Figure 1: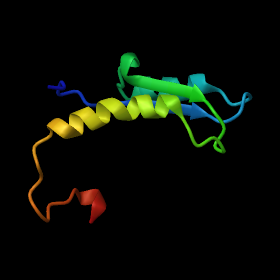
Figure 2 (figure 1 turned 180 degrees about the horizontal axis):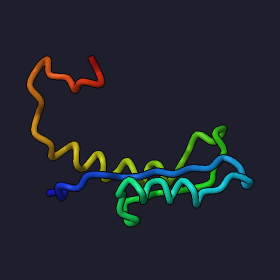
Figure 3 (figure 1 turned 45 degrees about the vertical axis):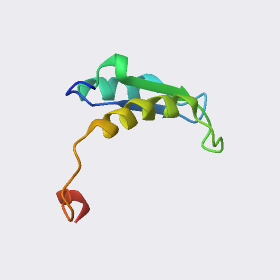
Figure 4 (figure 1 turned 180 degrees about the vertical axis):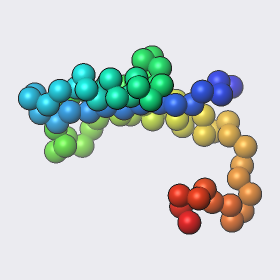
Length: 79
């Protein structure tokens, strides 16, 4: 069963001139553990993003173990 801390980070830069470090630093400031941050430099034109898929894997595992939500319940941001 996944731990209670389900925060996962993903940082991407699309060009070599963009700086990935600032994105990683921003995730760290928000308390995302370094071991749960996935990053890559890949163009937005590229459809396959391996590190993004790596980030989704633990999220999917966590979701699989989450209790079902009551019918009709929504978070405030989706209303």
